[in-house]
Length: 273
Length: 273
Image (cartoon, rainbow over all chains, first blue to last red):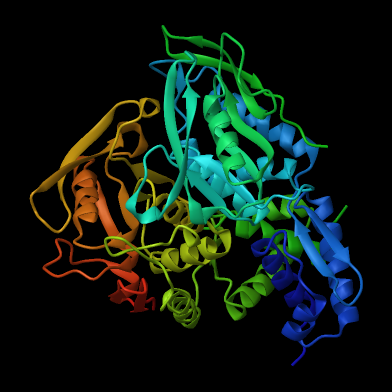
């Protein structure tokens, strides 16, 4: 039995959202609903217009036999700005300062409501680029990497400071950690988790001196792979020259008040076209 | 300007998927589309029928002034079975055996395609129960906890074996780890990350003797909170009595072949009504 348009629109919407960044041939839908390709094309036009109007994302349609439709969950620039403003509002003057100038973010990085938005915002910057893998360092970066990977629909890999027996063989590097350039630490990545020649997006929660991000860059080189970009939630106050120049940050910490444990933040250099 | 039904159906579908387990008043939609509540009710009937037919989930409609609609992304029992069969197929006889009888799962636990399904399946078992928080132990459990938390739309908390400076004050317990009952380890949880009196769902990748899950149960008690259930991806072969009885597993490892590093798995005791 043929399926009605209203049902098709609902199911197509769900299907596309669950399969972002994936080329879906029209035949999949026409078989699924026992409907003509021309009807499916009309459905997709309606979906495309609504997705664009409502800021849900873009539908790329590729014509021809090998063609189909691809859902790109890229946000509108104004929605990104709105989100970053929300983030600043949430953090500004809040009692989130921890000893050592760190900022407590664990609640947000454990909350699906924040993570969905963080993932979508960061992914939006890289929607037009080829990304094969999202990389982060355990453990704070993991929820961010996973959220970004969900919207880019690519795997994420976790670099560790300590090896686990369940990882198999690893590749490790030494990197200079912290602001004092004399502390050398080790980080490693399971050999199986990244293919040689991958294009890798680095994400993390904080950037201070840039040592951790730099370590990940070295590790990516060990896998003969390429860095697509690096994005952090927050760049911390740092007196000195950062070892990483090329990164984007959603927010930056401007001032910390150790007495009443509050911080002041403002939007970082993150933006999308 | 009023919004057409086709556009409303698409946007409602997206909105519900992004806000699972959340009571959404009809007025939100009627304002959003400048449409009468009666039209919105009709839309929701169509959405509800399609969601049920296509296995997307259930729409709960609550009548009255304080009423609204709630999307419950519960899977059909047959889809759960199908997924577990896929999981067994993926793992059976694969070269995933690591030294010590561990199974390499990092690729799946870093792949959004698997994680979406794992999250939805595990969450489906607890859709009818009150869950305030999903708990796991760093670092392998984190992607599982996050995926389950996305579908239940509740926060997840990460128990650590080593404290981080960015966590603030923690509560720690000692637990008996491993099959030999003489190895005592420590695990801890940030005090801020769990409210007293919470209902907590435990998830993890593996269960062998049950020590880790037992440790989390003790920790939950320290927060005067309650365990709703415990679910693991895989239960390992274990010779002896497990310290945890009440858990569900998606699959169980039946046999390991150390020579060619393959494993044999079969469905665990996981099921939903």
